[in-house]
Length: 158
Image (cartoon, rainbow, N blue to C red; front, top):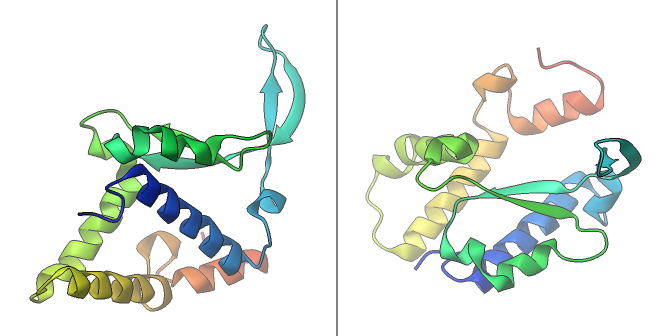
């Protein structure tokens, strides 16, 4: 069974991701760190500006299509907007597919993993390495923490 086999599990993972993002960014609520989006009228005219929701991209797994998962996107000021990729189109979600490839070829396929608990531990270990030690080509061979700090200080990545 995967961590998101049921809608409630997927919702719990999503809430955990929001909480972790708030912790990393030092925010009490991610709603305070969103940009603005145009509110478009029926004739295509811009009516107003409103806080932009953060897009959550998922595949079309049953846990992401159910009513339980939809509750994360309800309310008068939804923080999140759900975008599902096309069926049988892994290339439409390229960022996570690339991460999974990196995870498998740089870490998981290099050793024997005995069971689900060992897999969980190895994935957690790789996440720490990936975010704090491993340089990323897309950000000038820096680690994400350094690139994020440089961005806050106005230093360009390119």
